Amino acid sequence: MTLSSSFGSSRPGIPPLEVRLLREGIPESSHRVHAVVCDQRGRVLMRAGDPQRLSFMRSAQKPFQATVFVSCGAADMGDSSDRGLAIACASHAGTPAHAREAFKLLWQADLETEQLQCPVPAGATSPLEHNCSGKHAAFLAACRRMGWSRETYLLDDHPLQQEVRKRVAELLALPAAELVSARDDCGAPTLQLQLAQMALLFAHLGASQQPDLERLSRAMLAHPELVAGEGRFDTELMRHSHGQVVSKGGAEGIQCLSRVGEGLGVAIKVEDGSARAKHAVALHLLEQLDWLMPMTLDELRGRFLQPAPHLQLQVNGELRFD
Image 1 (cartoon, helix red, strand yellow):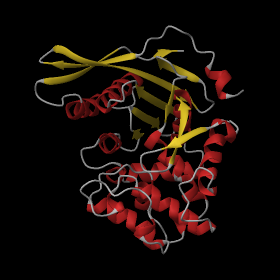
Image 2 (tube, helix red, strand yellow; image 1 turned 135 degrees about the vertical axis):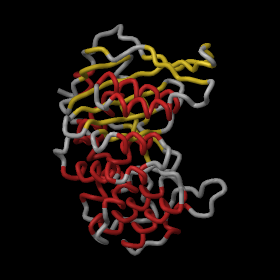
Image 3 (cartoon, helix red, strand yellow; image 1 turned 120 degrees about the vertical axis):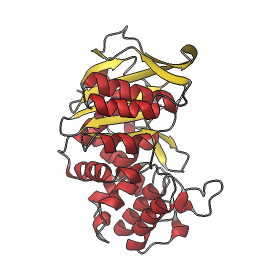
């Protein structure tokens, strides 16, 4: 059974979630949010809104892009530690510590910073400071290991990108030719997927049954400070989950989660692309799914649901069984 036919059986009429911004208790703004929980077989277990909604996966795809870096042996060429694997999956803050880890991937593969094709951020001096530099460094290391062109590694028809597409397609039980991609802001291809397909990928990521994915998820949990940065959502959530929840967000309102060892994945899409709304919904769903302790949730809510003393984010609705 393909994903499309499996997901097509979902019941209509389960509304999306709503996130409201309250200013001293008075509603000011609102966001519509779709969310879905899938298991490793691609079955939609719970949802709010449309599990077939299409969106680009953006940076939530990074752990799956990094699988080529691991599987081809490039991650072991210079004895890359878990820190190197974590930065390969990162959307980091561009701090000196983050840039240093991305540089280490290049140095271990005997590559130069100038070969990175991610942009130099505004106000920065090096592409190493770009939030995707770890991903790009891992791309280049894989190309060096496999003897692929390092000048064209971002092209959709490059062997590296075709290998990424192939691996994602295998996890989704789809022909690779069916996957649609477009250029991400860093220059790399990003896949357009159904929300339920994103949840399925994260079900695999946390299941600890695919050696390459298990190695990457373990590295992300061991070094959450490298995956995003101090005070950022993915870092704080993984740190406070004590190794139980893998979290990776993407631009335009994408947030994906997995529960380690359970083979369940969650994908969230905010219609208007709001980051604050996806974080609010993620915490709301983690409570409903009972994936975090109440004390932990309270601490995270204090960080991410109250952007200012007079402001509060409120989530209305819940996941329902499909």
